Image (cartoon, rainbow, N blue to C red; front, side):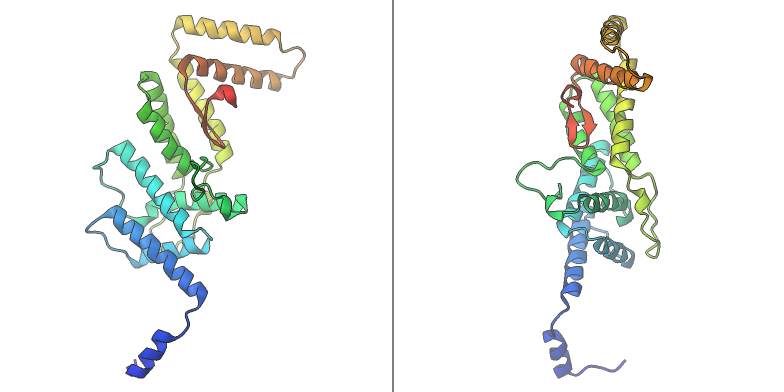
Amino acid sequence: MVAQTQPEMRLLATAPVDPEVAAWRDYVQTVENCFLEIRGRGVHWSETDRARASAWYALGLPAGATVRVLQARVQAWQFRHGGQARLPMSLAWYEPAVLEHAKHLRQLGDVSHDPLLTAPEPPPALTVTLLVAELAGLIAGTQHQVLGHVYGKTFDWLDSALHGVAADDSADAPLAEQAAPELEALVAKCRSRMTKLLLSALDAPAQAALAQCLDTGRGENGAVSQKAHKLREERLTERWLAGHFGHRVPTLAGWRDPRET
């Protein structure tokens, strides 16, 4: 390697920087700063981390949104395991959430409506990452033993669904965008699971009251298909349970009272 003279070094320092290179450098630096702040002392930014952050940049995810995704995952982890629990060491652990949000932005088609960046209104929970973070608040706010159990089970299921495909620590591994779960399908399954858990918690008088409600609903059905009849019963059951327990369910706009959906 030929040593550079001082005039040559001054010329390189003052040379115009490619805007794309500058944008990439700023993005990677932002992610690095956030990760090191989250992990604290004793953790170093590796070349594998840099390669992973570079791949995220290529997806078009804004740096601010990436930081919010990392913070949301930390919030969920600490809520579930305690504020003093040791965080996962690898940046790869955050990747499914980052990919999920990048996928959402592509479907949205307009970064200006990114729910992680919209202010000052609270962002709608349009991603699994945000649904999990919002659910942590619901768990903390309930004193109901049954709801606490159901919300806890739901939290674990959504959180594990987000990591349905394990991230690969190899810097050369392709980004597994299939790891990003389909939100609409997850929401539907999640609501069904919550209904089953709540039904299993009903005592005999409550079961009888629900059965009476469904019998009344059947009389109003008229000539409908078996599929429509089943869907109507599912909705009636979910709404009755909401009146009994006062719980909220996941929707494409966040956690809502099922009687209002």
